[in-house]
Image (cartoon, rainbow, N blue to C red):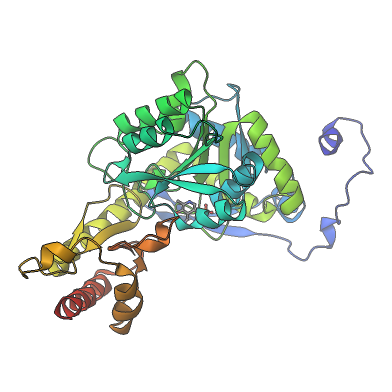
Length: 415
Ligand code: PMP
């Protein structure tokens, strides 16, 4: 009944809200970088109304101003317009929303298609629902539609088909891969042919720094399809505004988003009002021009980090590891070459090395941490791959980390 409070003339005895005049926070000033003025600081203050609403309970699906901002963003970035069968909700980051979408849609024990290697943060979500995770192969060009097709074409007639595919389309975590346009189109065609939803979990969309034009998202590509409504798009402010604010958005078919909102009512009532107040203040102060200028700067920052990291990889790991160059995101995914190719028995044992022990024990002892690739396999399969983040470290530390990794690999080769 809460929306009825807005009707003129109504006196409401409804809400169990505390009186915000008793709250001790009386003003909130923010200092924000202005991307349109070379990153100079600008001072803004939350209005009394914004502050009160920020301190108070709010709508389950988030602030309507933020919804409008997301509608505008989706026109700008994906050519998708409001009122065409999809809607928006705010969550505590995309993690929260992926969890709620999975819970809203999947039945316990159902099969789910997951690109593999996959963002490790979704494994417990599907696990907790008792889902069987079907691994769809990927490579440097992203998800492989041939793998997807072969799974679906050979699906046992007696078993319910998967209704969800989970994928990270740009700068995947962990592989750094961005799916090509051709592959996206094939995956989308398969989603129609085999009737499944695509969970487009996309926190790295705005961290795209590839040399070619960024391919369109699944959300954009389904626009021109007669029966759209198969894509659930997860956006996040975590990589571009603040990860600590915990603000993300779902854009997707209305009935699904509404079912997710019911989960919010049960789990946490709503996303944080104060986080939304701060996020909205930043976004509305900038406008879309400022936002675009900001993300261009962020993407450029990560491109430079990627370049510095790759230069250090070339210095220290040439011949000791194999990798593809990521065009988005913040990860290098590389294979440790633990056999010396010149050793007589190298070919025989080169394929089935496992990075787990090397990384967790030997690299750790040498003072460098990275994530062994097995973390990202639903099956926990052994792999010689490793994930390294290039977002944080200054060049000197990257250089030292990769030098230590080089020593670790050389040690392992000598064993
Ligand atoms: N999905 C992917 C692919 C991620 O890499 C991450 C963050 N590591 C998340 C979701 C969670 O992001 P958020 O902070 O928006 O919850």
